Length: 230
Image 1 (cartoon, rainbow, N blue to C red):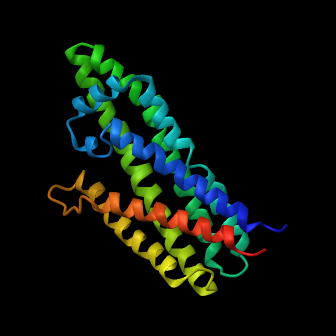
Image 2 (image 1 turned 60 degrees about the vertical axis):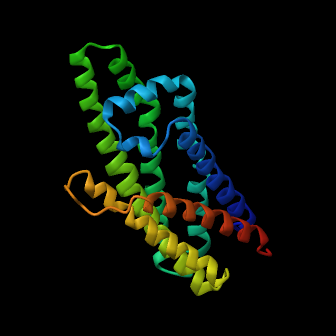
């Protein structure tokens, strides 16, 4: 079955914008991701103040990026017979997107309950919900979303950029952007180890810069796929 490059391009653009728009809204309305460095009680209080709108924003953040899942699969199907590692890349990319999706949904279905219990509960309830948030955040956010999810996404980007480079499908600077964004994004993993290893060196802007460049790269290759003559 012929896989239309234009379909891949549309999915990449929709997925990239689907990630970018709610992320931007969260930075404005919830001070994300900087707020995650604040005290747990402050996070839960501010989340509760955000109300239903904030809950739906997090839901949108999880779901609107899903076109990328189909794009990863279609790219894998298109080039799996050209390079042996594309199959591995596709598997890593799919897992990366799914675990990030699961991790993000904690903000829709778990954190609202904890935030409400924290704001309305007794002192004992407040402490219990703070601990519960820390556990859920460390597992659903740090382990699933940010470590496995982002690491596998980075590996997918490097491997697919390598395939694009060997195929000479896009200009060198496009492939270079894929590698550069991946390297910077990888440096953000230091923040995760800093949550469990005291004084672990951290580059605070690596996550923001790396993820932003990665989204730009997605938009660019999406546009390039639209221009490929069938």
